[in-house]
Image (tube, rainbow, N blue to C red; front, side, top):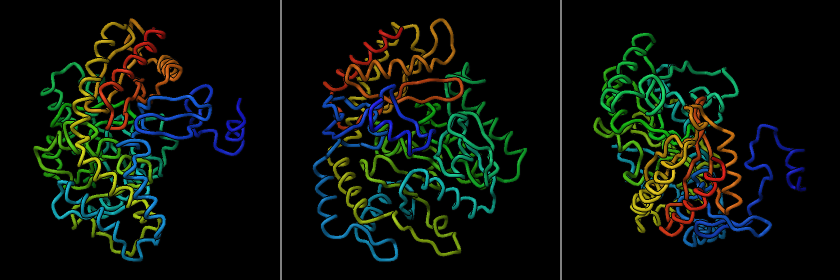
Length: 427
């Protein structure tokens, strides 16, 4: 056990998870690669849990942060803040929400917490609909709408939460149906739930479930949900903490795969926009954002240094069409991994879109989740110089692949080759 790990164990919580049997300390990164303190280089296919959106040590972002730090780092929201206004303007413009207002937080958890506050206040209801297998953060209210037992340390909640079907396409009671019938069954389930409860405030849903193993419903499911929700006045909160900013390739926002019935009422974001800096936020129609009748501020949300990073990162993302790169390179990577998976009995499914890819593993000859195999593949991939993530719900276990969106074709092929070897060494 190395010295830093021993010190970590002595002063930090036991429930603070670490990857790998021999945890690594990362010293620096560049592009799509990171190095540990032993000098070992890794191709990063997890991006700090989808936070490193463009590249490690992107010069445009580091320059913006350095220059801003030389002027002023922080002043709180009690003073006018030019970088915050400028980034809010850019985000409102690309949000797809009419008359959009933006509130900045420091994390996705805090963003979802704020969205729940807005929705329950606006609707005067503490009943919330959420998806099974979902994850929305670690605050008291966010845990209360998380439909994933592995990330729910308490059943206590300020909310009454009701879970509906639809977030997982290939498991559950509707998995055998075709896409149209699947959507119809999920809509019928939603209508049934609404018939048994007081009027809910909102449905909160990830367009692609992140911690749940990069699962997603057929396109237009949430559009069909939206039609029903509108009839009851129920708001739709799209949790874009992991799916936003072009990661899915086909769309800038994950909700746009479900846009037939219009945009969400509220969108939450975080992770990638800061490229490692702590930025989260909420986008909502002005009437919803302005519904609070008490004062509020944010001490660290929207601080100048993080806003400078977000502006530089978003500009680079748009000017270099990293969404298009995610679509092109991600499409190649998915097909490459599907070809590998077709040869291995433990690979149940390779799913995803863009550079948000899940590889679900099962015990060969069964349909049972295999978390031990996922752990073994993570270790083997690390030995091969590749960092991956993992996730899944109560009956799933998946590898999570989410590299920076500037990933090259050569790097995608390199990572796929390392992962193939890790899978073959496990099965």
